[in-house]
Amino acid sequence: MTAFSRFTPLVSALPSTVPFVGPEAIERQRGLVAKARIGANENGFGPAPSVLEVMREQAGDIWKYSDPENYELKQALAAHLGTSSANIAIGGGVDELLGQIVRLVIDPGAPVVTSFGGYPTFNFHVAGFGGRLVTVPYAGDREDLGGLLEAVKRENAQLVYLANPDNPMGSWWDADSVISFARALPETTLLVLDEAYSETGPADALPSIASLIDLPNVIRTRTFSKAYGLAGARVGYAISTPGTALAFDKIRNHFGMNRLATAAALAAVKDQAYLREVVANIHAARDRIAAIAKANGLAPLPSATNFVAIDAGRDGTYAKAIVDGLMQHGVFIRMPGVAPLNRCIRVSVGPAADMDLFESALPQVLKAIG
Ligand SMILES: Cc1ncc(COP(=O)(O)O)c(C=O)c1O
Image 1 (cartoon, helix red, strand yellow):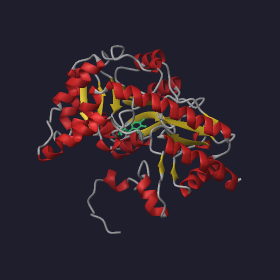
Image 2: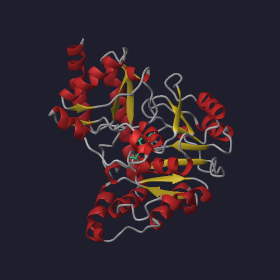
Image 3: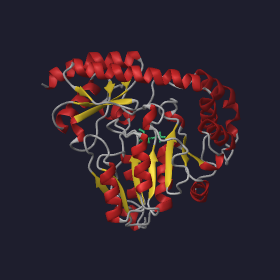
Image 4: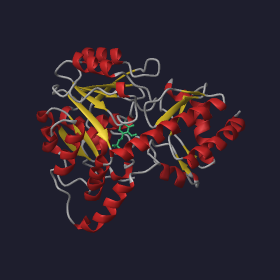
């Protein structure tokens, strides 16, 4: 294929990979329909009726750009979190914020520490800005805090990524361990503490806002994509010191937020009663996934997220056969990308109809692949 001849050397050298192949792409490639969409850690319970109502009401305003300062959403988040709006930056989902953070910190060749098999979109951004990934294996299916700290010091890394709770295993560290890890880092190392699943874990897995807010080298990222059920809206936020938060203004796309999406997020923060309801549904669906796994002789891992990693007991080839086999039945799930995590499949929560499809397809697939 002929391409423009003067892309930057960095871009020219990048492989054409994507962090995730979307379910739509899989449907097109395989000529199948995903009847149960339980692979991308979305939230099939959907957003609150109050959120949909606001989106409908405000649809006619879509000719206007969104407020570039995201004033109202920041105010609402600040009130919700018990912090100041100066501590908050808004972006198009955590994924966009991760790209901005990498851009703020990384020169080509700079070492960046993360877990081997951890959230791949972060790695994608590091590659895109020319960073050098240094990976630390999971220990006992959890990100290894001691190993990450050791790698940061050894490499004098400017940036380290930790998801708590974690994707793809659903594991988590308690708040005290995360706080100790953050405080043990050199001041010259920025911690991205990705809390995309902050609403779905046990309370003691989430450091209080106050416990880390004084550290200029910590940015916590959160999203409306998971518990709030707004993945397609693309709204996320970062929490840090005011000085660190201001850095986003130097590089972000100031008119980049979708006006309806921002209005939806604002309405979602205001409807905490619905959030509690959905979180209860997520917990129940998690239990159901675990029960289905056990009934089929597989071993569900404990989860603090909106999905369950299930140890299928063999290798990545076997897990992939389950993933592919389920898709053949219209059940879209995913699996971790590298060994030894890829002995697992990963099933996102969903409404009862999705769980029913998973329950009926799984034994058929296991029987078929033997
Ligand atoms: C750890 C983690 N971070 C970020 C994201 C993406 O969040 P967003 O939709 O806000 O970009 C995900 C989604 O699966 C995730 O698992």
